[in-house]
Structure formats: structure tokens, C-alpha cells
Image (cartoon, rainbow, N blue to C red; front, side, top):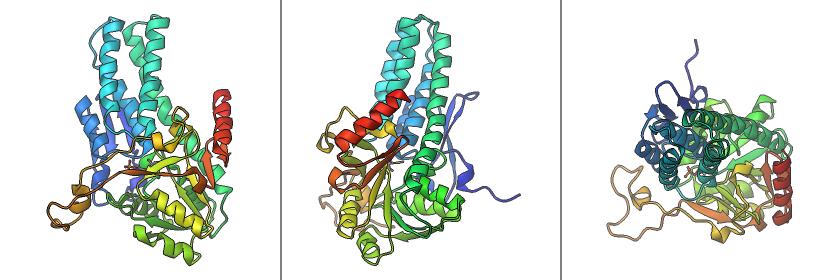
Length: 362
Ligand code: MRU
């Protein structure tokens, strides 16, 4: 029997019999594939905060299963008492990371299920717990189908043999199965497209080097790792025909928050005439945020820049460090936003509303 690879593991899974949320500890990759079994609110919060589970869609799936497991532990038959405790857990999990909208999106979706079943339909708490389980499973199953649909649309934008550059990890490890930005790459590989992928290492937490390079290499895809400051060079040399990136929150005007450094890649792509595509499940579009300057950007601790990945601290003691985890790419730099309902193009204020209408009808 052939050895298991990272592709054989679910990024996020529910072990209902043992009341556990099971995740791959992504901080240990690529050195070690270790599964974590999370039971308590604090364990789930820590896993999201520490990026043991990360990437917007995967955070949403983890939050769905997480809040279900916590709801299951609430020991009361009284709906209002149940709901009060549910909201406490929800608020706590929602505070683990601020930028990826999928976290609050999934938690709100779960809350709506509890509210509707409890207040409108007056169902017993035991039944509400079962409905919550089904909703969490649905969030994950939908994510698989959504990633595949994004892949199909994305594949229409490239041709066999193309060079594709990606930043951070918007792959299987950040979502379900095909990933978002990697979905056209995986689908293309299944169909013999022979892409050449350039993966930015993605300072400071190296999601590109540790995760994207790892999962694409495991899938047998031709991937070349580059430092973040090399994307201009490979584009200028004509090695890249398209950029595909994921996103953590898309504002209603198309401005897009994604891993720090994405906006630089977009600006360089524009300079060299390379199309820059954002792959966005509609769960990542925040129609309530009008523009990118309203997106809250997570700032993380300085040690991620000065110490992590080095045998000993490499920067002078006491130096000031700025460590935002995300930046916002202006809509004007984005060639297209690839959703599961089709590709939105400028002007995004209109095209994203069209996607919203399709979502409403879908
Ligand atoms: O800090 P991370 O690793 O959670 O950041 C992840 C990204 O920026 C991804 O590109 C984004 O979440 C999209 S994942 C499909």
C-alpha cells in the first residue's frame, strides 16, 4: 500500500463520537503531519489564533464544527438558557481572528439555525443540537463543491503550459479538497494542463513555503518556491501568465484583504501586464463592508518577524516591528474575482451585486 500524503487527510473533520474537532496542526507542516483533537472552547480558540487551522474557508468550517461541539456540551432543556450560553461561546470563538469574514459568517449561520428552531419552531434543545450538527456538516460539504466550481471558472482563464503565481496558501490546507486559488491548478493537473506554479514563500509565517509548496509537490504538480521579493523578476521574465490568490474578506467594491504582500504582487502584476485573479467563495464576500479601508487588519506579535524560523533572534533587540497579517489590494488592481457563481469584473460594485443576486436565487 502506498504511503499516506498530506492530501489524504481532512484539513478539518468532526469526530462526533468523541466530541472532538480534528485538525491537522499546520504549524508543524511540512516536517510532521500531526492531528489535534480539540474539545474545549479555549482549545478551539487557540487553534485558530495560533494558525494551527488557518485559511478563511477552513476557519469557517472549524468554527461551524466548534460551535456545534460546544453547543452539545450545554446541559439544559431550556432554550433561552441554552441560547445565552451558545452566544457566549460564539462571541468567544469570533474573537480569535478579526480579518477572515468566514469566521463570523459560519458562526452567524449556526446561530440562525438555533434561533429559528428554538424561538420560531419551539423545538427541544436536543433537536436543535442535531440541526446544528447538520448545518456544520453542510458548511463543509458546500465548501467542497464551491472550491470545485471556482476551479472550473478559474480554468477558463488559463491555458495548458501556463505559469501561475500564487501567494500564501489558499489550497487544500486552507479550505476543502481543491482549495480556492489552487482549485484551477488541481483541476488543470487532472486534465493534463502541465502548469508551472510559482509559490511565494509568504513572510513572516511562510504559508507558501511550508504549505503551498508542500501540498502541490505532494500532488505531483510542478511547483517552484520563490521569496516574496522575487515575484517581479519572474513576471518580468515572462514566466507567469496569471496570478491566482485567495482572500479573507472582499468588500462590496471589490477591494480585497488577503495575506500581507498580496497587494504588492497585484501592483507588480499590473506593471507587467499579468492578469491578477482573486478566488473568492461568496462566504468571503462581505457586502456590509463598503470599501477595503473598513476591513480590520489583524496585527500579530513581533517575534513572528524577528525570531521565528531562526535559530537565534536575527534583529536587534528593541527594534520596532510592524507585523500586519493582511493587506488590502485595491479593486483597480484586480482583473477578476472568481466565485462559485462566475467571474466578477470591474466595476465590482455592480458585478458583485449580480453575484449576490445569483446567490439569493441559488
Ligand atoms: O493567516 P492565514 O494563513 O490564515 O492567511 C490565509 C490567507 O491569507 C489565504 O490566502 C486566505 O485565507 C484564503 S484561503 C482559501
